[in-house]
Amino acid sequence: MAARDNDWKSRLGMVYSTNPDFSFDTGGAEEPDTLPKEEQKLHVSIERKGRGGKTVTVVGGFVGREDDLKALGRLLKTKCGVGGAVKDGEILIQGEWRDRVAALLRSEGYNRVKG
Image: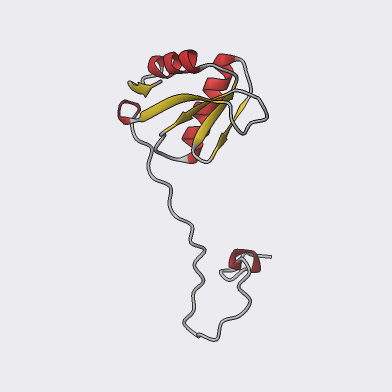
């Protein structure tokens, strides 16, 4: 079965419209292009609250596509040898790695790193 323009999954709860000119918009905003490494303003911080007593290193301020952010998160997790995640535009690294993560980002070409 070929995908249709008005497939039920793409309507996200829209059942019926009486407007003959109606065109459902899913509201998917386009991702911004990834800024070059030299222009990224990244900040590295440590968070302890709201994490069940666990300490995480948070890298924020990344401007760009989700795929590029995930690739950077994967690189940092591998270099630190720990787990982590990419959520809500931030990279979360398990443990207290602020100095090492900042040094790794600078060595990768991210010159504007704070933390």
